[in-house]
Amino acid sequence: MLNTSHKRNWLIKGGLGTVLLGFGICAIVEIGILKYNGMETLQWVTLGTLSLVVFMVGLFLLFGSFQEKISYLKKQGKL
Image (tube, rainbow, N blue to C red; front, top):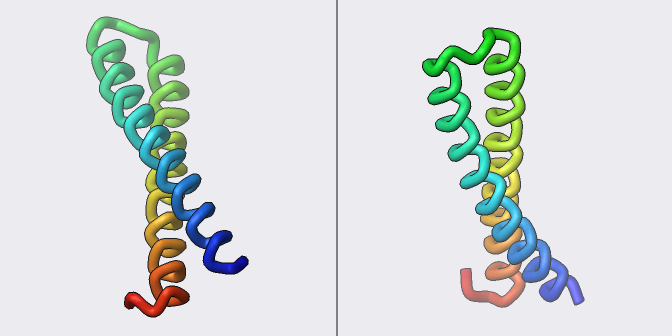
């Protein structure tokens, strides 16, 4: 049961983390382009901050998935 839980968490966190990480990077780049095209300061600062938050959440989930994978492999006796 515990092994299945670690594997499920590993797969969910890994997939979601990868999606959010990629989306965050794309949003950061897009906000940078909009900044240089004349977007108002308050708008690009707000959107840039939100983009960084999405990026960091994705990174956090991705590292969490690595931790789950290590726990899963330890329970399997492969590590």
